[in-house]
Length: 330
Image 1: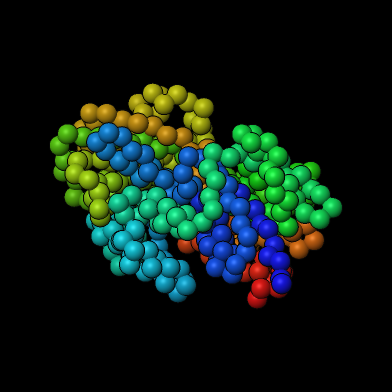
Image 2: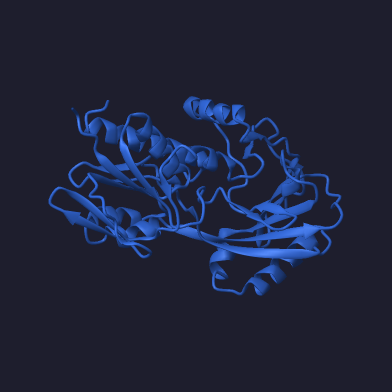
């Protein structure tokens, strides 16, 4: 009887979940771990007692036929839908409309929903921070901060984490891959979530902003399936965020609220700030994924494939296909 290889995937964002889903469908024995309290990575939502706000990825598009089919599956399951937002472009050149023909999808009832839908069918262990990939003569061991040495010896390890988190794991066992990951310039982003008692009367639901510290503003409560209430999300530009990456939340909120007020917004009743240390890659690499056949280490993530949700899903799936071929499953 053919013995299935044992494979570890580190990271349960869309790339890791896509990779794991493809491997599991082929009968591979999987261990999927993530350091967070839930799956989804930057397809993230902050929740309070009576509010919620998507504070990471704001929407995703689907141009590739295979990813469109996957999004259709999510829609059928009720975990994604089209966001028919009125989107503007503010700043240089004056206010104008954005591309209304572009389909923008969101998770329903929150951005985390597609990831949780995928994770429901996977052997996911959360709150496990991998700190070391330890080679053995015939495979790999994982060491985590919370649990120490994992009891399973793995035939391959696949990293679906931001490049700066991959570098220290790869430096000793795979210095060439560490150098590749170190080339990815991942930038931070400050997000500010705002709650209002009454609606803001803007002629748009979201806008790209071309001057000042803001790059994106969105009425999160305009997305399908959201609860009642007026909730807005402000994203700062990467340049401003990097320059203020160690600032206090209060200082960040003061600057971003002043910029929002200059666009005509009133002060909110409450706000919450979140710092994304690794938000995007500039420029994004165009490698799709990496599979080191000799070491049996793989890399995937949006930083390797265009920087978007679609690229993350496609990169995770293509890495899984290479792994399956390597172990004789394709």
